[in-house]
Amino acid sequence: MAINYVLMQRVNPKDVTAKRKFYAVTKSTGEETTRQLAIEISKRNGISVADVFASIESLIDLVPERLNEGKIVRLGEFGSFSMSINSEGVEKEEDFTAANIKGNSLNFRPGKQVQKVLDTVDYVKAAK
Image (cartoon, rainbow, N blue to C red; front, top):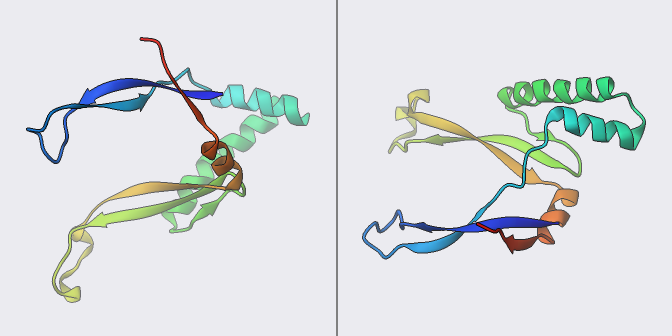
């Protein structure tokens, strides 16, 4: 399989007066729903679609809960999820309050199995 891309001309956000350049942007080949994944997992493992779907839905519920508790969620060879926060800096530690925190981000670090796939991706320019 290959990742499709298209070229987009973009301005440099660090220098808006600079000449625009072309950058590769991924082009999706479609979507895969939770149900479609559950059906495929069911075929591969002999578990009912309902049981697989329920398990996936439980995982979808549990991951955000655990992240909200400040935990790193490790899903084996798939990878891990963790939270990071963005804040304004202050000169003195005692001047910092939670009001200085401006947002958060979800981080995903691929596991060995996912990284192996990412390391071998081919790229194909998509038709316009």
